[in-house]
Amino acid sequence: FFFFNDTATTEIYTEQIVGSVRCVQETVDNLYNLLIMIIMMNIVSGIIIDTFGQLRENTKKYDYDVDNICFMCGLDRETIDKASDTKNGFSYHVRVDHNVYNYLFYIAYIMNKAKTEFTGIESYVWEKIDKKDISWFPIYKALVIKNLQEKEESHQIVNSIEKVRAEQEDLINFAKNLQENINQLEEVAQQLVRLDKGSKSRNSSALDLKDF
Image 1 (cartoon, rainbow, N blue to C red):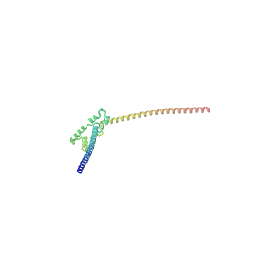
Image 2 (image 1 turned 120 degrees about the vertical axis):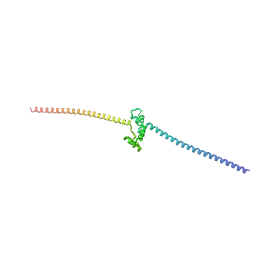
Image 3 (image 1 turned 135 degrees about the vertical axis):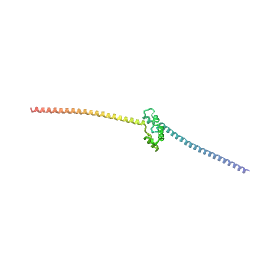
Image 4 (image 1 turned 30 degrees about the vertical axis):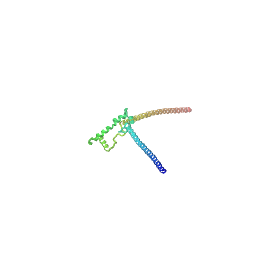
């Protein structure tokens, strides 16, 4: 009877120990799986956040380029506003001077026109379009920049003329001073000549008196 009871007790304890081990193992497994899920969720969240951050940066850069850089010539807003005489120089430039749709319509017009009716400029543009060459675009060229360059050249010419005039006046003043110095030297020379003649006449008079 006691031996049976000891065996039964041992089995009960064994089952309890096995149950406890299983419970601990399941807990550890669940915690491990939960940790792996948290790590994976963080990795995925980081990838998503980085991707959206990169997309946001690209969107900001795109919006900045659209708002501040001319698509046709590549000049920025500051340069065009500085060169323009109007208040909204950049807006006028992209709306009138370098309107993208005007270039698009011009390309469509050339592509739908008979080649035998091309003008010289249209033939040139068609060859560039056929070769997928964009060198006919006004890259870093604009009417406002050309006008600014002409103004700067005009200012340079005016400054050069003023500089030449100033140098001419300096030369005239130098010539006047030189002439005055020459006149003074001539007067000094004449005085020296007169003094020399006077001394010679006095010496001859003294010799005459001695002979007398």
